[in-house]
Length: 229
Image (tube, rainbow, N blue to C red):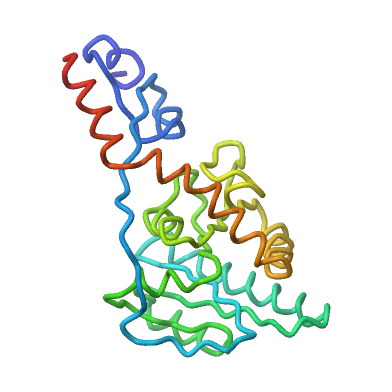
C-alpha cells in the first residue's frame, strides 16, 4: 500500500536508477542512473598468450544468478564455433571466464577446450580491454557494471534480454541483445565474420550510454533535486 498509494503523497521526489526499476515498483520516478567512472586500461600485468585466429569473448560471473547462466554462455560459444567450422572460417572463439566458479561447475565445464577459467585478477580492466566482446548471460535490462566497464575500454556488449525494447543497448547499433540461444548464436556468428567494422561501430555508438552515467552529470542531477527539497 505504501509503495502503490502513499509514496507519492509522503515524498516530494521518488528516484529510480532506471525506467525499468520504476515500472517494476509501480512508481512515477525521476530516473537517475548509477554513475560509472571509466578507468584507464593499458596492458595486462600478465601478458595473455593469444593465437591470431582466436576471438576472445569475456564474461564475469559472481555468486547467484550469473553463475547459473554460465552453462548457457558455454553452449552459445560452442555453437558459434560449430557455425564457423561449417563455414570454413579458421577463427575460433575462446571464452575467458573471470570471477568465482563453484568447483563442481568448474570441473564440468573445464572439459571444453574453448573455455578458460581466469579466476580473480587485479588487472581485470586491462585484460578486458583486449577482448573482442563482453558476453553477459544475465537478462537484466540495466547493464551490469562489468558491461559498462567494457564499453569504457572499447569492447562491445552482447547480452541476453527478456525485452529488447527496454534495453540500454540498441540491437545492431550500440550492442547485441538476444532473447534466445539461437538468436544469440546467429548474431555472434555474424559479429565474428564482420568483427573489424562491427566492433568499431558498436563501441562508438555505445559511448553515449557511459556519457549519460558520467559522475559529474549524475552529481548535477542529485544537486538539483536536493536543492529543491
